[in-house]
Length: 113
Image (cartoon, rainbow, N blue to C red; front, side):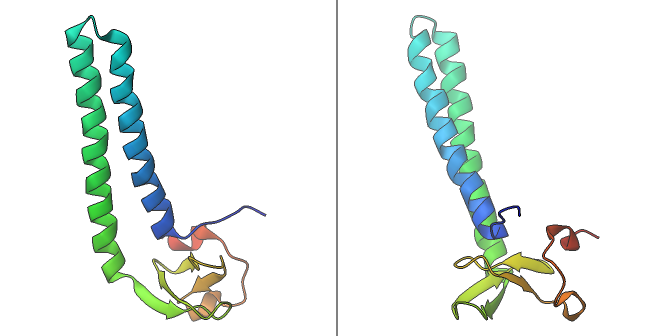
């Protein structure tokens, strides 16, 4: 079975990876310290990755405030659900807000129209 993560955690992980990618790109400029143009390009691209990460964090923060909060029936903790189906952030229990999907096998394609 494929391992699923909650949508909010996936987006947060993507934003965190953008930060690290930006730092790695910026450190790549060390190899071209004799060529100022390449250093400037590497630093700019790295900075754009970090700014993009900030934008993604802001976007998921706004999206997270609009998400429906439910109590997970498995672990009893409050979690947020985005879309028709999602996974509990804590115990990876499949959750749905659509009564027609209850009892069906979890599939993230249910969120697509």
